[in-house]
Length: 85
Image 1 (cartoon, rainbow, N blue to C red):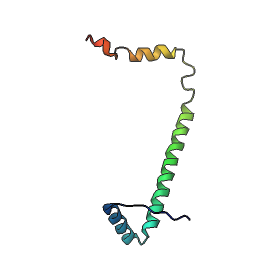
Image 2: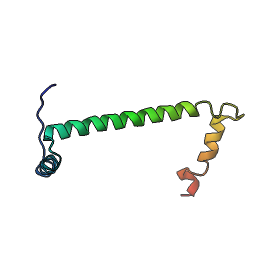
Image 3: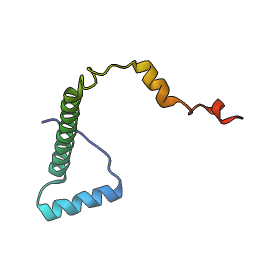
Image 4: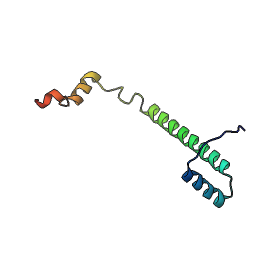
């Protein structure tokens, strides 16, 4: 394990001390647990997004359309010069 030093504002330190008192864990232990949970949560979100992208890959493969025309049609009428100023 590596030792590091961080600065906490008064309110955050107070909240950590209260949680430490209630849980019986050290402030360091609470911070480590929160950091690990944060990394795990972000990793799970990334994995879920990649799985969703894999499932969606090629979904429009069978459609007979020109992507450029499709986008131009979606954008139609959204140009500033079409407002007549």
